[in-house]
Image 1 (tube, rainbow, N blue to C red):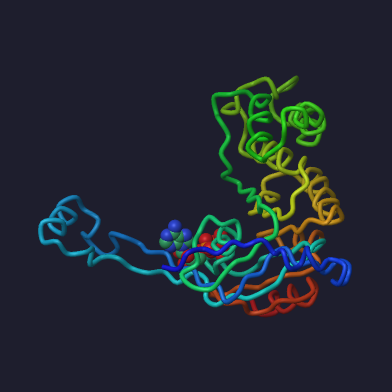
Image 2 (tube, helix red, strand yellow; image 1 turned 60 degrees about the vertical axis):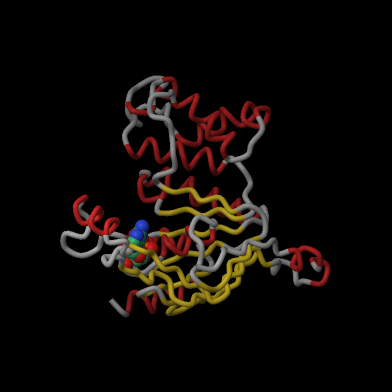
Length: 276
Ligand SMILES: Nc1ncnc2c1ncn2[C@@H]1O[C@H](COP(=O)(O)OP(=O)(O)OP(=O)(O)O)[C@@H](O)[C@H]1O
């Protein structure tokens, strides 16, 4: 399996003066293929007895199956773009996002990124037994903020999340309660708020907006627009076409791991909706 090549797009930076404003590349995916190897596929293959017998017979697992999740995807993302990823269930959206974040090595092809991409998933780790307050600090540190920056932005993060608002759950200051007492929506809001407090070169969001209520979604969409203005690139995976239309200026449409269409939001979403 080829190594993931994550080079900085120095060329884009170095030649910034020569590159048309707003066209500095931040992510280049060059014919990226991602293959999962699933061990223990097939009936009985996953049992301890069959694993032991394979060790004794020194055979490699006959039950290993490959899932070719992303097939030859190529695109260039630029500063200031918000790119939506759409497609049916299992079309490879999350896999492509994880590959851009450097969490999955391509079987072939390359991903070049400028700066450190941050993946904000609905499953981003939070410490359930710690209070929301402590999680803001830890999450901020994990995102690369200094303690000073976290102190400065703390109130903004909590206000943005709306965690302390009446009706968000427990009345009063929920931020001082352990995370395990939060609903999944409240936890997702806090995660988004922490990540959105920082300016990112490349921010990737996987369905995080789907969990908040409408007013939180509006705030999040506005913040994504701001992040774009601050010269970042935002990727958004969502099944909510409205969210994609309201937030993204460009859309990549994947089906069965292949890039079907790449273009302005309106055109691609229309074609996608017409195909269903
Ligand atoms: N960890 C894994 N191991 C093996 N196969 C996987 C793994 N994760 C995803 N897949 C497979 O890869 C393909 C693409 O999955 P992926 O989660 O990227 O799709 P998606 O477009 O994000 O789907 P959804 O819209 O349902 O979230 C699917 O066939 C899926 O079964």
